[in-house]
Amino acid sequence: MGAWGCPHESGGRCMRVNGIPCDPGMKGCILYGRVTFSKAEKNPPRLRRALEKQVPPRRR
Ligand code: SF4
Image (tube, rainbow, N blue to C red; front, side):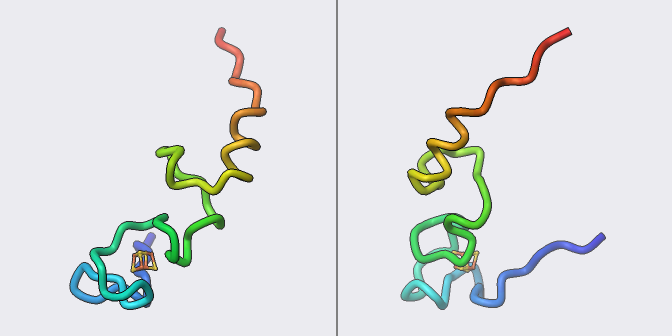
């Protein structure tokens, strides 16, 4: 199984967002809004609302 490498990352910096340090999920990142992150602030409001509506799994 291979790891994913972002084509916009170079030397730890994001060439898509003005060369600032790569922070997957930040605004402007290609992952923003496409995947959900465990840090709620990295998710757009639409995804945050969807996650809040999810029912937690039942415990045995
Ligand atoms: S911030 Fe996102 S788009 Fe930019 S280099 Fe990192 S993973 Fe790629």
